[in-house]
Image 1 (cartoon, rainbow, N blue to C red):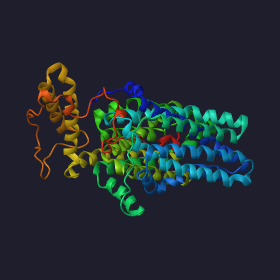
Image 2 (image 1 turned 45 degrees about the vertical axis):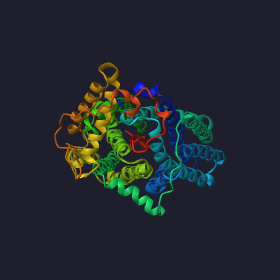
Image 3 (image 1 turned 120 degrees about the horizontal axis):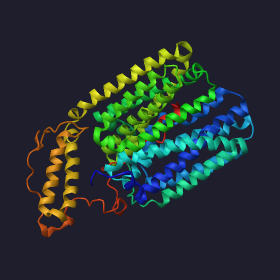
Image 4 (image 1 turned 135 degrees about the horizontal axis):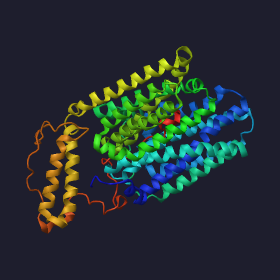
Amino acid sequence: MTTNWTVTRILRDRNAGLYLAGLVVSAFGSSALGLAAGVWVKDLTGSNGLAALCTFAVWAPTLCGPALGTIADRVRRKPLLIGTNLGLAALLLTLLAVDSRTDLWLLFTVLFVYGTTVVVQDPAESALLAAVVDRDLLGDFNGLRMTAVEGMKLVAPLTGAGLYAAFGGPAVAGLDAVTFVVAAGLWLLIRAREERPQRPAGTWRAQTAEGVRELWHRPLLRSLVLAGGATMFLASLSSSTTYAIVDALGHSPTYTGVLYAAQGTGSVAVGLVSGPALRRLGARRFGAAGIALTAVGVAARAVPSDAVVLACSAAIGLGLPCVLIAAFTAVQRELPGPLLGRGTATANTLIFTPNVIGLGVGAAMVELADFRALLIVTGLGLFATGAWLGVVGAGAALDQGPGQGADQGLDQDLDRGLDQGLEQRLDRGPEQGLDQGLNQGLDRAPAHPDHGPTQASPGSTRGAAPAPAPSLAPAPAQGPAQGPTPGPAQAPNDAAPQPPASAARTSAKSPSDANPA
């Protein structure tokens, strides 16, 4: 497939459009309930601690991500997503019975089950996306998904707050239930043929360990996931200073909503440019650049100026999602289909668990130290993380071994060159078009941004330098049917999904979920 796909091309694809619509609808309902649940508990109990437990109840199941992700590798993903969405809709309706503090056990139980289900859904959605979006569109799609979800977070909390003020918590729960029913309907409309997964060998524990091991043994993925976890930990330390910053500026606590909106605007913007940026910079450079921008934004928030703090919030929103988009896109491209569910869930756990820890540590540190010093130290930590990712990632592919690193980059670029050659056959003749495509693939491979220079692996005939490709074009009589996978003219839903041609979305949890402003 060619690499010049755009956001418009994604939106024109039926399956991709339905997939994105399902995510947007779910994000709207979840964001509305996320705000209303805390306010609901606060009104019923007057306790800030219990209100904060609402967020913890949703995030706690992330700790079990690798084990829960195994479920997505044992069943067909589309029926799983439809069933879990309908189940959540029914579960949320039980919140209609909550009307006093004695019913809080029900609210917290629902939130915990909700968080557990989301941990299962994330890898299932990742694996199903292999039948929806071409591998070359992953960066664009993940960025567009970030834009859409973050855009909903600018609208949904206000809607949820207004609905809660007018009709109470049960009304917001009812709205969220409706969004899950709509999302289930959208999943049902997606055309994706899935074969029943073979039952994995070994115990549940062994299957979970296999997903962790597969992710950990790939240096590029390991460096991106570790950098993502470190970034989320440091960003959560920074977010704990938000109220101190607002107080120093002389504003009321409600001013945090303005900072939240500024950060959300930055996240919306980065989603629109992430696809082209990933193609130009590669995953590690894109992630490192985003971390560096976040470092500047965090440290500069120590300046007592409204304009500077607002600009820094937007910069954080622009930079923080970069490493997440880079990490999850790399996971989608590197892991084989049978392990994609467990691998994605493991990445979720390693990236987002430090965020929860950082929130607790930051809450204690902001009471013990000057918030400006904390911001500067956190900014330096982020800058060091970005530099580490840039340095470690540069050599990651050289350590991957046969079949991964450089050879994998060469294989990917040869595939693209072959597809481009097929598209040129009509204009330049079958042999000339295909030969040129092969040459373009070989020329591009040594400079592959995430897999390093091409090196010969044991048993491989590929050399370290590009050489003129021999004529491998099929005879004209063979026709296009003998060539590689058809180009863009063939919709992705017209053929069964190919698991190794990775694809998935970024986690349902995003930076602004727990790191506002």
